[in-house]
Length: 287
Image 1 (cartoon, rainbow, N blue to C red):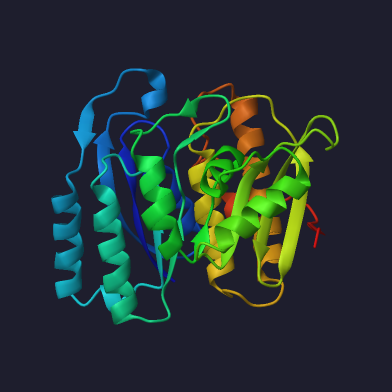
Image 2 (image 1 turned 60 degrees about the vertical axis):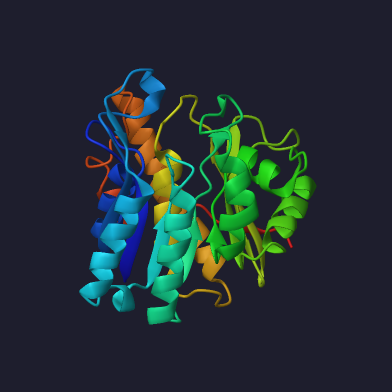
């Protein structure tokens, strides 16, 4: 597949396109990255150099690619961290151009806003932009539990609430939802879950919870699931298979990172996990 990935870039570490591109390439996909920011490192360090990319520059890059005939070759558009409030228009314009050139293309939106521990870490206007304008245009969205609750406008703490929130988001337009992290009080202690849903059902997969923060893990998760799911978009069982493959790869990546003692994802060192993960997890159908 050819994937147009519109996300942030950092020179040091792995978040945004700096996290998503290599795993996708390792799976054998062609990736065309377009950057929304150009930073030295992710903002979790508290200090960074660089600046957001103006929306006009993003659009200029997409326009030049269009002149090369590249947009007709795009199978998937993937967007993540947006940086400025004007990037939404540039992303939606790119999606519209790609779909006009290739009606079979799909759009995955990773609605990056924040998480339960850190709260919202983007410009305060961006969550509303995502909910009102961007997510309705997506075919697949990949929120974490915190972002899912914001998009659905409801509290999400139980499996029942998670499924209701997923339904609310799908009613906005997307055909499939991946919830990249599910914490619930009635789950087994020391575990974390991931849930995928589409018109064919909903599946939940459980793994041990590794007790550390891994910036960029959501970006890798969105990229891997997008790749696995998009190859058979909407087909029976494709969400289950994509969920199982994604969770297995992510567990190995996070385990390797945790054992290394390093703050940044061991993205390159864990590369075999994207193609051939050694550990497998079975997804359970929950509806």
